[in-house]
Image 1 (cartoon, chains in turn brown, green):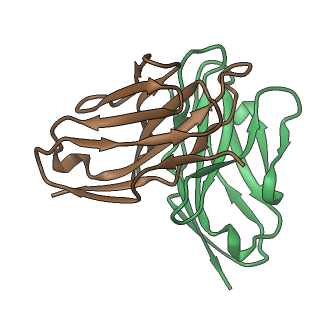
Image 2 (image 1 turned 135 degrees about the vertical axis):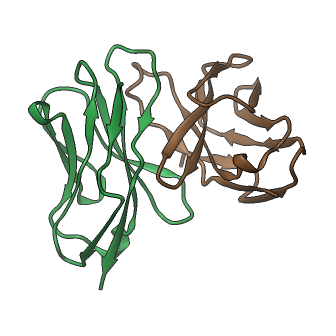
Length: 115
Length: 114
């Protein structure tokens, strides 16, 4: 069965800390995504990656960066965490397939609290 | 502006009752349309998708959705709801022929009463 694994289910950090959120997929997918989920706002795309060492900004990239050194791993980095980054973070992956109609596979999410 | 709207934040139905969750989009051309479900503590799972052709799409877990071009809608339905259907439901779109990624609606939380 396909699997997208996020390293932490819950994370508590302090303002100003550097935070790493890790995501690993075992499906050999080319595309990986980071979303944040907030009540009433749905999911918003932060960054995505089409391939190793490639990255593209999503709709809300400010305050975040990403790293994709290996195909299976996509890391989200908060360089200096702030309280407004308290949120649920969801990682997803997708094979390239025939286009943008391929379905996304999601991890279970990381609930990040920044104090 | 292009967008996807789920007008109902929260819906409550009794087990065995029928269900309809609304989704409207505003794009120039018909986009690719999706419904995802998120059970408590879980990531999102694809229920169904529409690209073209038959406007009534069947999905997993007994769900279906109907695309109505004239109303710019893609409503999700189920004839008889089960307690295990309690979850949050997200409509999502990708403008057809576009390089943009999925845009999600704000979600509808479904509560099922016994």
